[in-house]
Structures are given as structure tokens and as C-alpha cells.
Image (cartoon, rainbow, N blue to C red; front, side, top):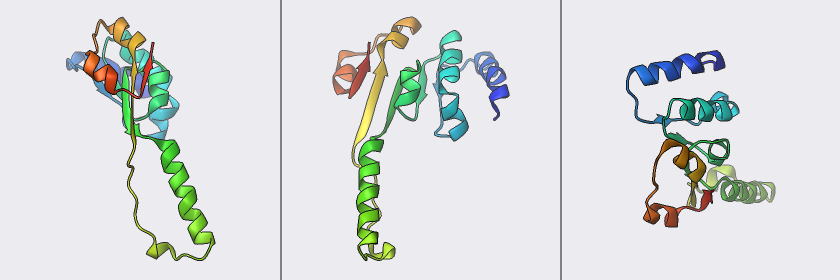
Length: 127
């Protein structure tokens, strides 16, 4: 999908009676996160983003690995390699810490109420 196709994609979503928008972790979509969030809000569709910047831009929610923790772990692995460890001998690591971010301004604009139990579990709530 190209940036020029975003408007048409949202028109199609509305025509097909979509109930929400899930944004994939694609570089092009990430660059246009604010536009995607605005289009979703314009057509009144809740939006799930792959990371916090999309929620900061107006998306409803994101649930993703904590990238800061992942970057620190990557630096640790690089340090081990630079100190003589063989890359093949290093364990494969998966994310262990995830972050839930909720934008209450967007929820309010969409007429949605986020249950208190979900808000309590959120790592960040944008008000």
C-alpha cells in the first residue's frame, strides 16, 4: 500500500462495515501513523497500533514489546560478541516486557468507555 492509497483503504473499510483498524508494523505505515490515526478517527473506527508513537499520534491503543528493553538487550549481545563470544553460541531472545498504551482522548472522541480493569493494566494512559 502506498500513502496515496490510505484514503481509499479507509473508504473501503467503511463500505465493508469494518469495526476497527489494526495497523501492522510496516515502515510506511509507521511514518504515516498520524495520518492513519486521523483517518480512523474521522470515520469513527478504533485503531490498534503496533507501538506507542501511533497512540501518541491519536490512535486508540497499542500493545507491543518495550523497545527500550529490547535495545538494551541487543547492546548486551553486541558487547558479548565484541568481547569474543561467537554469535552462534548466543541464545535467541524474545521480548519479555510488553507495554499497553491507551489514548483516553481518542476513546472519548469515539464514544468508547475503557473498563477500569483495562486502564489499571495499562502502562501509559494518555488523557
